[in-house]
Image 1 (tube, rainbow, N blue to C red):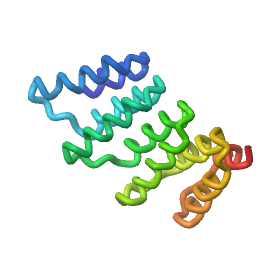
Image 2 (image 1 turned 180 degrees about the vertical axis):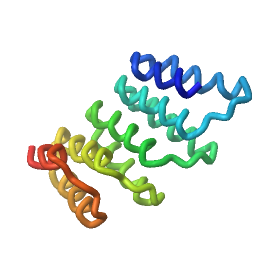
Image 3 (image 1 turned 120 degrees about the vertical axis):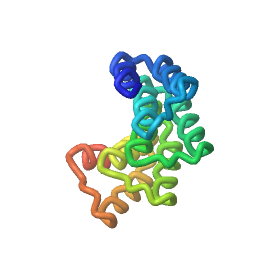
Image 4 (image 1 turned 90 degrees about the horizontal axis):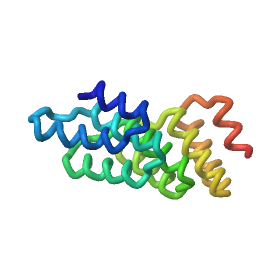
Length: 146
């Protein structure tokens, strides 16, 4: 299932990826974190940020803990849709639930804040990166100074 869900992501077929996830339960195949992340990544690629958030919510209700990949894909979906407040909220949830953000996560949050003209928030994320020794790159600084 995971390979097919990933193929759906590559083809911008988020609805089919979601349907496959639902089919897994019907076929008595338990979706793992890779399955969930692949569907969220598919939503991210298609800028379906609301669906990505819903999936994270379903995961939480099902007591499935998201990881860095889960949150990074969701944050990126929000960033692409211009939903900087939601991206920032997800970043804060990560920190509250002890899910470690990485460079990709932070870059997406900084970029979302930059697009939303929330430079103070972007600066805060940059400070968090330094405090937690999260590696920065050219994308980090480019988004931060924009």
